[in-house]
Amino acid sequence: GAGGALDHACGVAVAADGRVFVSDQEQCRVVAFAADGGEKPVLTFGKRGYRAGELYDPRGLAVHGAEVWVADSCNHRLAVFAAADGAYIKRVGEAGDRPGQFRYPSGVGFSGGLVFVSEYGGGRLQVLNTNGACVQLVVPPAAGASLGALGVRDGRVAVVDTNCRLHVYAIRHPDGGGAAPLGHAPVDDRAVATAYVQRPRIERLVRGEGDEVHEHHAPQLGRVRRRVRRR
Image (cartoon, rainbow, N blue to C red; front, side, top):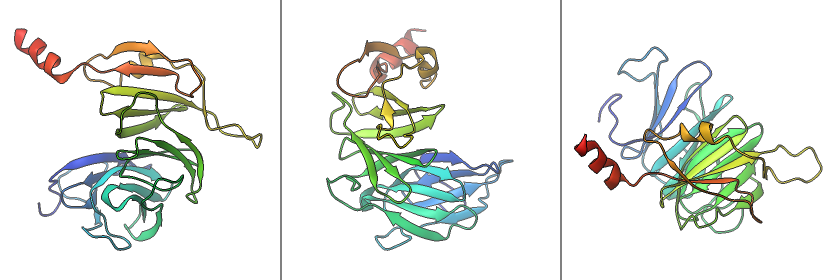
């Protein structure tokens, strides 16, 4: 669509000045809207392609200081732009299976100087520094092959998988002692439950070798629809 029309809005992030950044998968661009709303965008950047500054299937995005980080999924990388004017800054990562490489990144978020990236194709959750070096790599148990949207807030990182589960990890920032960023701290179940429009069912509590602390199961969409019809 022309102007600010979105063909397939996917990711959304809010900057400190209130501007709302939205990734448009179909048009392979990012559109920013003013804090006070309105249909006309105040900034648009990116276009379909493989070169520097171009996007192919942009998904999750996050604003980090003066930068917008975009999960450039089909280019298997993160693309970084200036939040002020959309100028291209750099790329982070490339296609591959090694730490710091990606298979269809789908979500991105920040906590301090750490970057959290979920992979749709790789089924992994990676923790990077802002230079792109992998600090930790986690494969959520029983997550299947695909991880989707990712959110970071209040010292927690949450990621959903295509089996309708929400995996929540506690973040601990290393103090130089070599501790991994994702730890075993318990999660408040009530706070996690607000992630769903329909209330989730807590499936099980995970306390094992891995770093995951809670696993939740969302209601199946078919069941939700039948429940609505009966009402």
